[in-house]
Length: 206
Image (tube, rainbow, N blue to C red; front, side, top):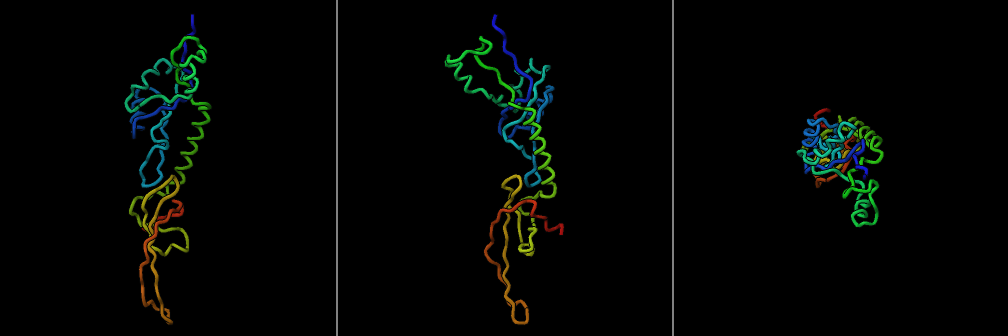
């Protein structure tokens, strides 16, 4: 009699429906699953998923019999598989299943899942310390922490990555007379610049 396949304990990667990472997390947790959806705040003080469209789920012995519920959970699109080549070869009849009976290989845990999740948790914790004082919204008046730019009018436009953002710098040119008095002031074309978020501070805080 052929030996039956079974799921293994470990961390699995789930694909979610668009912008439904937290919805999937909530419904899976309500079913008793251990779920990890890493969230960050790159800019604008609005949390977002570190890996849009994906969350992590841990299956232990007590969960293995309930894995069939995962795909039908609200917000979940499916389980990511890491054995596409083996499954294709098996479907073509070029290899046989290790168990010798199954039409499809069951999903497998993330290779070295514990270490992967540990590193992601450390990354999220590090990013949290980096963004506590670098949370800006579009239109915020900010100052670049650099003597060359501190006197210029600067406006935050948007975040472009976890640690960088785009600002608009308005350059002011002044002409002075021999006595040092300002005779003429003119604004030069506004320039768009990408800077590190840690190099910015809100103008109202000064």
